[in-house]
Length: 580
Image (cartoon, rainbow, N blue to C red; front, top):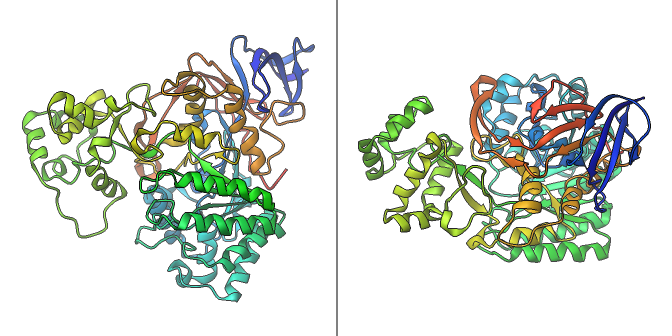
């Protein structure tokens, strides 16, 4: 008697092997049998004839560090076939924490990852101080997906050094030893790795870079050795130069990462994007990562499966949000605001005005709005279903030229589409001159790992937690601008490969003895929907949610957590402690 039996599905097992028709049986949360016409009864049977049966996706780059304490579903990541997620990335998180410094960690996360501070303040229950206590608190919770975490350098540095650490002053040998002790203790308790940020673009709400941004090698190597001594794990980072502000730093970063990995034997994964100022720099980084394997190092550039940028529109950030006429309407409900914005006299006034000068530090949305104002020609209409690899004619510049209007007029009118909720994509990275083969080349590099979805973060401007769905729908079925990618390869990249990188050898493939994490997918209909802004975080905090269709079922540890995209209420998700 099996708990669950999936009949006659087209199994893409995550190993990269060719698909095959088979049944998959699960008992006690583990795959018990795989093969054609399995004998035996089951408490529940799913007919998967004509459907894909894949392992559940493993998303290694999320920021649910606060949300896991109050939210059981962990959307939007869980909407896209993800059955295991890893958080604690980019050097930011909520443990360890000195009593009385909780608000500072919240402001750090809000500034770096654009998660509403009010939501974090209201939602998080601070029942820990040390990182092991944080893991113990998470172990009491239940979710629709499994959750693993890394220990963030920023929190560790602030815990040990206080204000000096927060202000990025140099650490003393004693302070470095104390940080290393905390990291080793965290890994021994079950942290999957340690993370840091060295990009100047990651700043707290007060404008200060993340603690550790300028850490010297002795500090970084101490963290790496502590990671090894605690049992091993991943060293993850957002490297210097990631924002394209310093084009020399990236290769220097690869050098110390190579030496760190070779010495400790631990894998290092780092965010890697094509930057406009040096559109071929990523090739040098990838070549150096591959060459490092000859020295025994393991470097894994972490790449995205689509352009890396922001979504702009009247419900998020946009280039008109600091115009006086718009500011007078900004507090209206979106439905009322759109009615006003459609009025010809309001449109004419906004387009004729200059921005209001701001002296204090504004919101993340305002900062992005100012950035977008200088690149209107390179905004792209997403559409429904959204197209993340658009051609030139979908750009605001091309639309303006075709209609004989200015780029501002074309952008304003485009924002009013879809009942005023239209979103346009501003590809800041990975889409220089619409070079559509860059992302494919990055994905197919032998050292590349798929990540950078940032689920739970950048709530008002980005919704890249849907990347797993893009990988399946776009890269294996819909792509028109170049070669597609094999379905078996794409499934492996976000199941077996990501699971193995983080030491989760008990999942990621459909094989007997592996965890019963499964997706049942209609490959003909799987598609993304347009992102929508909702206000469902604590304290009414806003975030973008992007749904999908075509996921017939998502199964975690043998329990169906979603049917046709809808939450079933099942909560089999647990904390993943350490390598397995």
